[in-house]
Image (cartoon, rainbow, N blue to C red; front, side, top):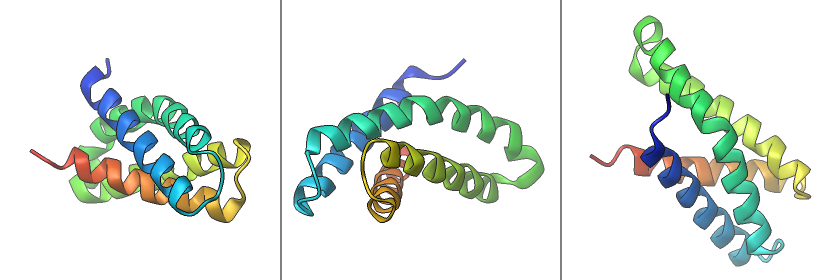
Length: 108
């Protein structure tokens, strides 16, 4: 089972950051960026949650988190691409939104 609080916090963080980035760079509608970010997070976060649990023991915490975050970034970049963003912008949106979400996740 996935924890609902981290899922909501992650989706909200990524949606806000993607909207702000899209708005500040004048790329497209901030609402579209937020929608794609939230949808991508809702898809990838459950896999990330279970992936960390499964890989923490064999890999150790930081390598596990790095691997899972990289996989989430790549998957969500594909989602941004499907949402109409260029590949370069998709990667930028994914990296920045996921970095913000990961940073929030490390706050005790």
